[in-house]
Length: 235
Image (cartoon, rainbow, N blue to C red; front, side, top):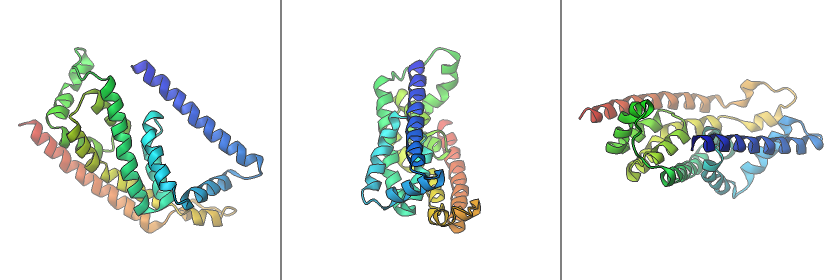
């Protein structure tokens, strides 16, 4: 399984690079600069009425491509604004999580390994099975890699109700933070100042400060969630 997974990741990465190269090549052949290509794509997507729905579908299918979920979450805020971006990401990210969980559950056995790695993972495996909700909640809110938690919980056959609820609530702190960060990107200012672009002009400072505050709040939530999870595992 490990070899297949690694090979699949390489293939998926190659496909994304080829798609990016094709898009840039198309724009360059028409005399557009790279910033102008990005602005054109951003404007087309952000103004299309069906774009949020297509985004949810793409996010759901992302589980098969291994494209970093964080980039899509940030893109949602930039493309659709904070509230619409948050709603689209809420559906897309949860659908993607359950898709990966379902794939891993189908192929996984959930059995304990006898090697040293399996023994080291035994406490986490036990916590995920006995206290699925608080453990998944802690893993989600801790900003751990999205797919690692999804596939890991599926392979270990973590009870679905605890996984679903822990995912729904635990994803909110990082989701809100990254969508807010994406919403702080002002592509209008970027478009208007292509000839005299400064990185500082790309961000809405107020929204960026909100993102920093949300990140701090997430850290507090993680601390309380971990404390609660440790308390449960001791009893």
